[in-house]
Length: 259
Ligand SMILES: [Fe+2]
Ligand SMILES: [Fe+2]
Figure 1 (tube, rainbow, N blue to C red):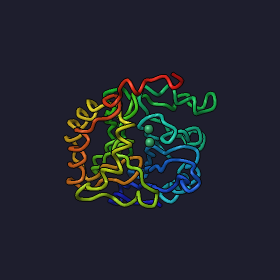
Figure 2: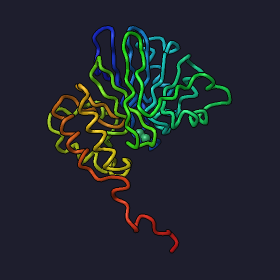
Figure 3: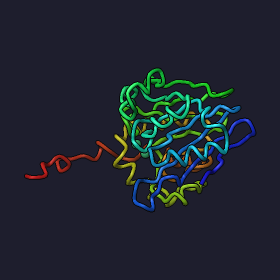
Figure 4: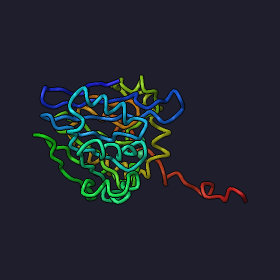
């Protein structure tokens, strides 16, 4: 299902929530995003091979996909960008990804396909022109990947937060935003964040930075988006107090399995 999160006639943000065939047990639910400004398109975290055909068709409803300007990849996981070889062949897009991963992306592709097409984002981030707008790559390192960016769209006041803020729900349910109190939604996020996020220190420092953004939406790559100041403020309060990753490891974590 395609869900329009923002549309002012010149600037459009669309979320796709059910392109992964969960029913066949083939993959975790994941969201993909299309941002268009004045006819120029960016895909954010377009996903792996199982979403490519459907996402290409969905893009064609909004603009000519061959004219895709860029892919913005939060990190290099398979559910984020494993389809990159198809997009590089089918369009003239460039791929923006952390400098930590820029030299790893070619492993998804045939030899020579990526020459001049991968743009390495330095650790402090970057401002990327899309049409008449700018999308800002905001640092979110170790949340969860070692080189990790989120993408802030100041026109829509929307933070595409990658895996941070993700929740484990079905694709049909993922299109429904959380507004107001987070309430029971915290239970849908908690296990994922405890295991996939690296450390509370990174969460605390990230939250301090992210609170400075003007936000109407916080849109993760898995599960339901958060809409409005109340839900987003509660998310910051919850996440900065969460122990996760290396905070939780003990001697038990590193016992030899055959001892
Ligand atoms: Fe990931
Ligand atoms: Fe993910």
